[in-house]
Length: 165
Image (cartoon, rainbow, N blue to C red; front, side):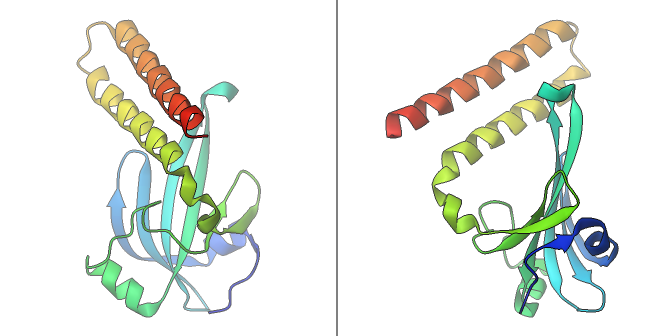
């Protein structure tokens, strides 16, 4: 399957149709999508990031893993795992903050598992915070606790990185 090096973001997104929604949470979504005209299928992983350093700006990202026909069937039937990043070991496409979709080869980043683990821990802390917010009597204390947890996660993973070098 021959794929382009880069694609125009909006043109590509407009050419997609959803084949099957697989999973959706507050922060991420997985769908099998098909590109009209080419019949190429992709596993689309979309998520958003709140950029606190820029005033809480929300950045949306979408990743597209090209799928063979057998992969499409296996994923749709629930017989093949598909979660990012564990099962995204070959070239895929991803959006950024501009108007392009670029190829990305994850084989160069297999050693970044610690960083991914830290990101997951931070996401889990944010999800707990969101759940607890509704019942919290002292929302300020809950927010301070969240920032303390995030700082501890970052510090712990930073120390692990330093000790492994």
